[in-house]
Amino acid sequence: MSQRPRGPLRVACPEALASSVLLPALRELVTRFPEIEPDILIDDAVVDLVRGGIDLAVRVGEQADSSLRARQVGQLQGVPVASPRYLAAAPPITSVADLAAHPFVAARWQQLQQQTELCLYDAEGQAHTVSCPKRYKIDSATMLCEWVIQGNGFAVLPDLLVADALASGSLVHLLGLHERAHPVYTLHRYQGEPPMVVRFLQTLVQQRLAVSSGVLGKRATQPLAKG
Image (tube, rainbow, N blue to C red; front, side, top):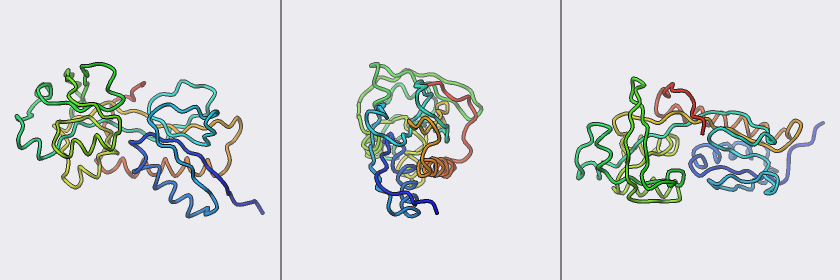
């Protein structure tokens, strides 16, 4: 009889996927294997799996480190959002070009330049670009989402992160626009087949991504972004 998994399991994940994807997956995992002891690292930075003793990492975008074993488990898209409170008091947004006149709230991955060049797709797959000066910069994805809910400009955030706020009406999806899809991967450092509990968690993460992705309806079909 095989031994049931037990002991520490160290997992790393970006903040945008923590509450909607990783935590529900881990909850199911510990229900199945109650002797597992999750050690969760929520960090948008690229973590060294070997040095950090990470058993499994969830990352967004194409992965360059060939020493790690990567498995694509889903994808996400950025969507422009603002709160009804903000939209009621601000100039109307009727086209992509109108976004340039509104305060843009930048996330960590959007802070490289003072101007952010957004490339957004409409329902027909037509690309539109607009340059938006950053008004606010917030390092935490969840705090950024809350800041926008409170009526402070607009942001482009992962659809999985804002799904609940869109469903409740706390945020509005602007003009039905979206960014290109970005792949989501799980990565591990094991040279051969990883432990069964790691494989099981990979499957649970993939299932959670599939469930969460359905909240906003059919995902757009633009090619996966390479970054």
